[in-house]
Image (cartoon, rainbow over all chains, first blue to last red; front, side, top):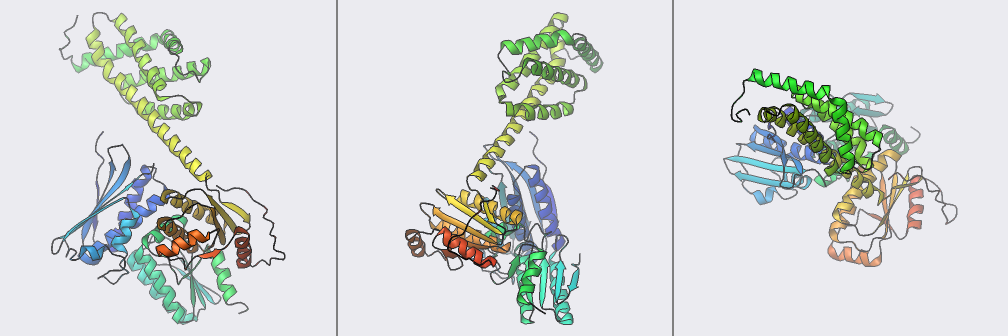
Length: 137
Length: 119
Length: 294
């Protein structure tokens, strides 16, 4: 089977945040993902894409359909920036910690909304957040 | 896209029509505050029926509107949160503990009227 | 016999393909009958009547020849999906569907070999790729459709296991019976939230008398259910929280301060009526049980 195309969305303004989550939802619909899961996925993308506009100013979000070893299908999202990176990752993943003036629910919240969550970051080099939402059953 | 705000008696009704960017949300906050001051409104309804996502920024901003208007003597009711959206907000950690909510516009108006009965 | 390694020119290939297609069209009646007979002998599609088998066989046959002619499986894909939708509820299994398509492949190739005894390899070159694609397309569409049906059924069973009952206007009751794990708690919350919307509920009574044990994870799910319901404008009352469970939860440090708990279901309904603005005359509240919205 041919690999599914990757959709790449440049994140430069707050309108791009909306575009990114709408594209991901459109892909999730093609998998018959239940609407609650579509909403959880779209919300998680909103959080990680906003982290880009807030801290790094610009970056990109890549969305693709994936399949695991058992044939289960899902949507994978990679949000990448070359911004300042996160100095204290452990604290950034704790509810209520923020340096951006918000509530600090962004990263820990997004992690709770999806099935797989990974974050790679280095101060001065940028941040890459990868998340996957699988279809149920 | 700007959110239209209608005046209905002592109340204001802000009906969100489509997905909001952060800029739109901040604009809505400023507009609501200006209108509350101008009309001395007693209550505000923000109708979010058409929102399919309420992330932490939108939620926090709506909470901010509710807190600010309360300081001007006006109660804010958020109406029309969809089932999936409510589920996602709670997972996210946003539970709007100090914000009034109602099922839809009709219920929201009933709630405001009960609170300000006879005026 | 033709050299099997010879690469025929595209023109020669097209000519042969046209001949094969014409042959299969000319012998449609006979070959279709032969195929239907073999389906019967192999005891495939036993859930269908003879007329049904013949009618589907006709459509499959015509689709088959068309794919051979055009090389496009697009129309076949639509037919395969449609066929699957019709026969899955009748209990037709994957091996049967694959079985009949392979039988047709054999019936047709036998007839072609008979007609072109000296050209078997060239015939195979033209016929085989299309035949394999056809088998593939039918099987994939059947399996996909079957998975979709199974998912739907599982969903329906899960929903049935936690009925949301409308007791009176604006009041829902959710009696939970049995072990509550994370997945079920989540399912239940989603269902309740949809129920609130559909029934325009303002108060919900969740009765957990029938839940044997609750750990902190499930308790937190319950708290989330309460929070999410409130976001939709509905208040939640929890009833049937046994003193053992209450003690466990307090010991575990679960914050239940936001939860409106009432001892038993009866008391919970009375509290709900009070919230809805009804006056309870006597202690007894008649619950005219409305439809199950599950």
